[in-house]
Image (cartoon, rainbow, N blue to C red; front, top):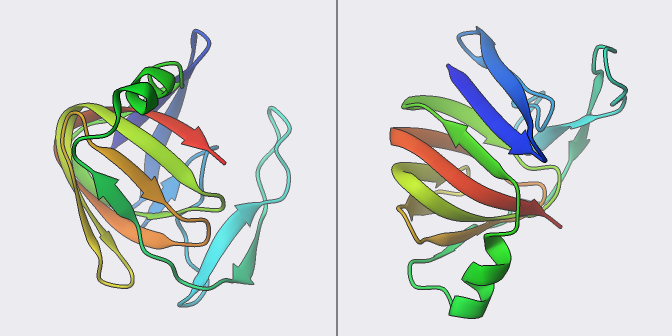
Length: 146
C-alpha cells in the first residue's frame, strides 16, 4: 500500500509495514481496544512517533454528493491526499472534512455507517471515529482537519 499527501509542494509517503498496521505521520491506525484510537504524542521530524490510547465516543460520518458551490471553492484550497486501490483501517484523532477529486471508495465506520465516496462528494468524519477504507479506484481528495 502506498499513499501520499501533498502539503505546499512536499510529498510525504505512507507505507504498510505489516498486514494490519499502517504507518503514517497523519494518523495511526492501530487500535489498542474497541472504542479507542491512537493519538500521536511526539511529532518532531526524524523522531519515531509514540502513541497513547484514549477511549472516545463513537460518531457517524456524513456525505453530501452535491455540496454547495461555495464549500467546494473553499475545499479546493485545502491540501490533497491520494491512495491506490487498497483496504485499510483508519482512525480520526480530529474531525476531517474532505472533497473527493477522483476515484471511488467505500468507508465503513465502526458503528456500521457506510459512506460512498465518488468525485464531487463532500464527507465529514468525526473526531474519535474509526473505520475501514475500501479504495476501489485510486482516490485523490482535498482534506481539512478541524
